[in-house]
Length: 99
View 1 (cartoon, one colour):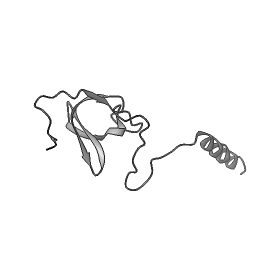
View 2: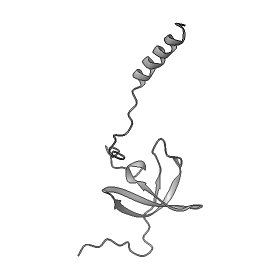
View 3: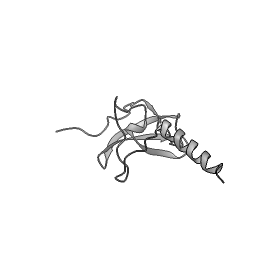
View 4: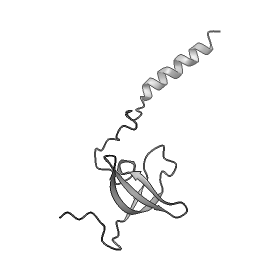
């Protein structure tokens, strides 16, 4: 039989939130447990003030090498094209001056 429960007092270490838009980015928390939620591996982290919080593994420094963020609500993660943004800014600026 496969064991899924943690051993008592098992230390899993800590994880830092690395997702660029997460409000707690850059902060490190103790890992309480690892579980799968709706097919996404999730870490339960201990926050001193709010208690525990669940964060996808890929949003932390525990992300597997080469891991890609899973779609959220069926949508792909946002990708930013720096050159495209620059071209858009130049275009928008040109429209302002054509009055």
